[in-house]
Length: 188
Ligand code: 5GP
Image (cartoon, rainbow, N blue to C red):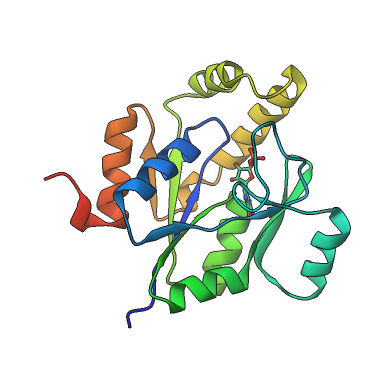
């Protein structure tokens, strides 16, 4: 059986990564999204085991000590990480795996699994990003301010990825992603 491929999607929060990834999963039937671990508390509507594995700091640190993470990082004041076993199992079963993680995690993945493809989603401008974060209405103003700063930091690493996709038009950005990840499903 063919070993599944590994795709890493990064980009600042508010850039539309999650919506693009959801749409991508609908288009590419062999692709699955890896569920990350985090110490961030769940937002309203988020489900444990579906959106994230929500862990205490102690539980997360235990997994670090056990070497269970393919990558992990501090993001926006919390710990986030991808369990190596989940990725290995899916790839060994022939499934393609999508990681939606930050640039620090992406670099660790590339160092450990150099066959991974890293795609970076960039906003048309920082102003558009600010508007999207405010409109999303999920976070308090000081959280948004912190995320804008983090976005600038994240964007500074866009050039290190294999591909950059500007999310100025959702449908077009999605087509670009599909043509990179499952070209057999791309619109002709
Ligand atoms: P949020 O808290 O909004 O769900 O995610 C914040 C950021 O954490 C996202 O932009 C995402 O890139 C990053 N992130 C989510 N899961 C992981 C992970 O497993 N590892 C790393 N390094 N970053 C992650």
